Length: 501
Image (tube, rainbow, N blue to C red; front, side, top):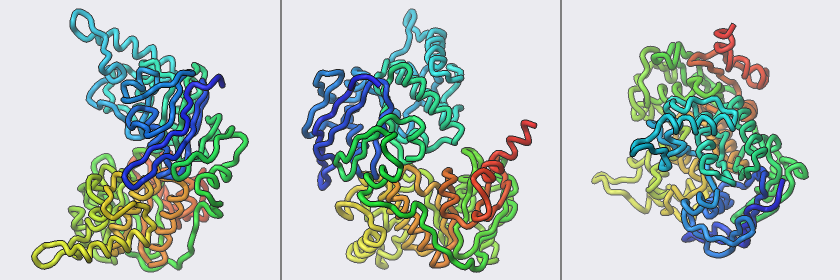
């Protein structure tokens, strides 16, 4: 690691009702990978948005390569050599890889974009990263991990000195994560500095040199990663020791409440059959593209299936829409809470009561605001949702609190069956445990719970049985207490292995 490239001193930022940052200090050296960690709401995103010119700071100073600078826009940040790869990738899917890399900076010859030259230059950058992607391929045809590599190539093409990676492994497989780590190693060799934001603390020891912990908008510690344990980092993040990462409760399994028989959907789902019982958490594991989310959406009526049947409490039901699913006692917490789970421009209260409006309106269809507010206050209190008020826009809440708003919405309907798709993606360790405790409470109430997760440690830690999928098929249904992560991964790649033999 070299000398300090960026130093942020006493950075403060306040929003209405929220002191987001309080005299925070942060620095990154040339050629280092520096992890920025903390619970949701700790101030990580605000600090990064100030560094990348999205927000202006209220007070404090920023030094770049030894001189004080003002960063008033993302363009000014890019001119300094600061590039951000957001968790939600910012690419034009209908354009090619090369067109995305040089978007707004195209190679022009005789007044026309020189596609050949552009592809050649893109190929050089990709080869520099040891990434094998065709520059002429359309981005929509790439995997999420390949799209991330295009974002990195774009940053390199802009001669970025600092690359900020926000939750880069949240939506990719373990194999793709390994490829990303190799690329990060190449970037370090080239003298690039990486600010790495992740809630997956276990992966940090693979790539990180130093770590900075924020809590409640304040700087807690900066240290060499090798001098800390994961437990140390968690303690600094939450201000207390977490005794048990995966709290578990044991419940005698009740009657069978959900039966899925022979469910098929084109080439995406093939003869899916499984059961769910009262007081059970049933996990769904598999690699990206295995079909887990497709199963959930088909059961909930969000997508139609070609054949198969669904039985609830032994009775065949017709579920052709989410409304049908809700009427039959199902709830679905989707994978992408911002895109399909929340009405981001509405208040916390409006999002909580969205699925139970029939309980808060009178015969004329007018909302009883007093009743609505009492319901909202109870959910906020019971789930410990951190919000300045009921009327705060839900988009301003942290990821963990947004997730609890969606869960609270469904709790009001008191469904019999819950489907949680990646319930802890993008939320911190403290909020994860709160979500696990909610699942455990539902389990003790005799609810049937399906949890889809890409984290095998999570599957092992909270489920009773696990359904393993590969290429649209169920390859195994295992008792969690009698299996291992290695066995689950074997069945998650079974069809791929058979096809390659």
